[in-house]
Image (cartoon, rainbow, N blue to C red; front, side):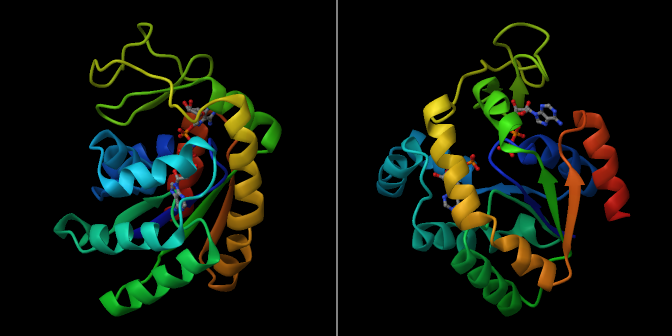
Length: 213
Ligand code: ADP
Ligand code: AMP
């Protein structure tokens, strides 16, 4: 199953991807996570991407497409994958189509988690992430049992550098200007399903699994 989770930053893609990994036993491919790992490793690519990420801007397409090309070629993707946070521009979506066609595969479904901008700000400013296992918790909506400790792996929960009210504004602008046009692109491909992402985490999971069965 080749899936994509679509939606504004903070819509719940990472949160829901964790359930799909378990259900379908396929990997989550988050370009944001890959970029953050490159920053942690201080690679040239990571250092270049960091400038854009810190300002809430999109990283150039050429960098992102290179990342995805390498990642999809890895053996754990052979039975499928969950794209999370990619593609975010039309050129990225077109490159993905070409790449998948060369690999003899296609996208089964794009699931859009719809959440209005007014709710996004609170979700992002309250987000606490675990750099160790990638869990995405929330101080109010999805709190950890123990403060600052990840429920899943015991790692220390942190606030992402770009999760502040200022950067959220530019990230939402980038979403509306550069990513939202993909709604028509995937609707025309007949793979686009919209879900109400404002429901509780478990209800969104239920709707998502139902829409895939
Ligand atoms: P994305 O991967 O789309 O950027 P996340 O999955 O990291 O978004 O979710 C953003 C924040 O919102 C996190 O703090 C997460 O715990 C919280 N969250 C996710 N889904 C919901 C939901 N359905 N209701 C309330 N909060 C949610
Ligand atoms: P995310 O973890 O998905 O919230 O992404 C964090 C940041 O990484 C974004 O604000 C962008 O700067 C960058 N990024 C992640 N994925 C992409 C992508 N597909 N295209 C461009 N920039 C990206």
